[in-house]
Image 1: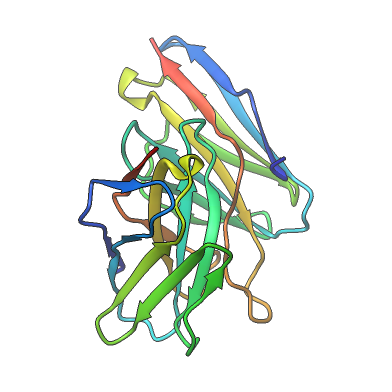
Image 2 (image 1 turned 90 degrees about the vertical axis):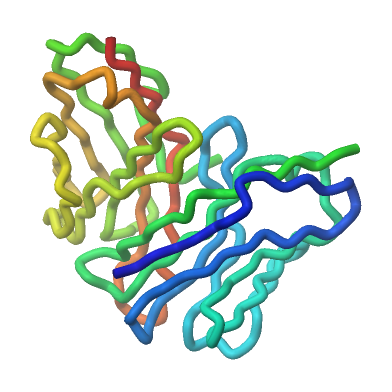
Length: 116
Length: 116
């Protein structure tokens, strides 16, 4: 069965500094995808970055990068040059192969606070 | 602006009421999803529709009844709900399994439900 673990309930970071949000996962599938979503207080889920299980290079999207360590089953999110608008809840998520839909499960989330 | 539209944004209902949540997408996605999110918790998968057919039901109580009238629309019919069903209900869509799809979920802004 799929499992996603985020062990940091809350994180503080100074504006303009980098921060790493941890995520570990467990799956028996060979083909899977890992995601990070941001959820501001408004409630909308915003896609940030994706890493496929067969992708050899770490994914990057602007200030976001995903540190993918397959052997350790970790998929940490790195946010560089933090901004005040980055304050939000961040969810790590995983989907396994197509099974009549992409069954995606979410970790417990990490609340990020960016300090001015 | 999100490409997945949910209505209503807020709903208050009594335990004997019947109401519906609606979701619409025009991205040509053939998989649509309902998630339930309690405060300070991650989204939990409820239902998945693939090509207008229910493909995944995560043991959701029958007082929640999903419907997919066509490839663009997804409804969630609510009847005899309990106060503990109060939550944010998120609709999402994704591409199907053809090609090298990432399985990214495109979320609506959610419908915030309060059951009195």
